[in-house]
Image (cartoon, rainbow over all chains, first blue to last red; front, top):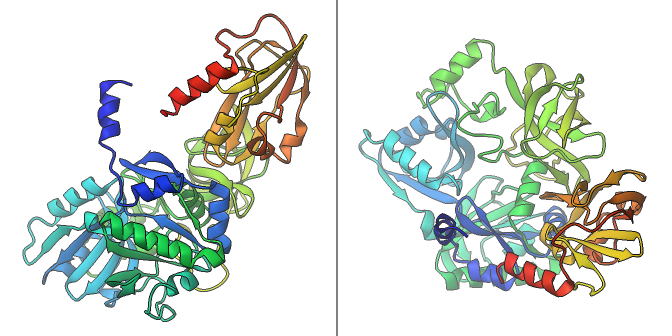
Length: 389
Length: 128
């Protein structure tokens, strides 16, 4: 191992639940600068637990930026593409920070904690960049207090059709009235004022809770939720299952479906982008321009493999003549659907469901077809935000 | 994890059982454990010829794809086509689940390891 590798390895950050993961025999990997569990008992079992019962995830690597002060609404309206005036206290929505050219700094979930108080949940790998971006973008604005509160919380996701039944056993708060993408505060595992949000990244019903980030508290909450979920077959789930779950639900992952070289229209996230919200947000002008010039030339679509083979990240998408027309951004076997699926960018002419294409897999052209997304949609309740409608 | 004494092991994590001129090839217990849930095995055709150390197929888990290298050259005499439907057999019993059989030709690839040597090799690779 070279010196630079040693330094890089030493610089990996760990969440407060690191020792808990080791105790559960997790396999740890580098994810966005964090040493995180990729799987515990097995990716497919973990994936199925979330689709049919309940799973628990450590998502403490996610970042959090708090914006407070009389100008905080103006700040989020300038910074983010969705319309924050539509949020009530206790409500959250999917949104994104854009560069002036309409491409992605990051996708986020914005929570309205109270009047003049917002919490932006950001991705792990982009934490540093995002915080810099927020400070830089809003530097000229007074009446605003920006705090990086990423390290204040251990963030735990409890996901699956039995998530509510599980969490309900460790909280006196009635969880039933909390609607999808709403949140409240209350006692969880004896801790007061815990943020309890009905959010997630699995396409399943579920909650994310934010508890203080010391190791003892995190380990205790994790253990209590696990034992509460035992009767429902709860499993600790790693980033491997988190990825296949979000892919089945066609939810974007930064660095794959969205990045600094993909714009909102291409990513098909237009329904979270409010050009007419009455505030000039970063990226708006460029996106308006693209729209006036006839729209994007490529778009994110869902693919299903028709022939045997698994299209994976970075594999070329081919037309029927075998010429490259696009690229897969995320591809994997779908454990619940038992199909091989992918998200890919293709020219608009190939974006209609039913269009036959090929995927180049190790030099061979394997047949695939464009399909509607999400690939998986849960039957009960309201669905979480998905990349494609 | 176990590594039968009568197998020889490649650093690319295949095992080989050589009996007379017949070679049987699979992947090691360490390989299946590292890959996780195996969902797809790409097999060669019977009659295909390979040089020692050549790629003869691939094995895919949910999250990764890994090429398969033959530890010895020769002609494929049989492929384990049951793996088309039940690739997860490899996770359950890597040592007992063969992938291809070859009529061996020439000497094995250089650097094949004994069970003890392979065990030491993977201990170093996995960092404990």
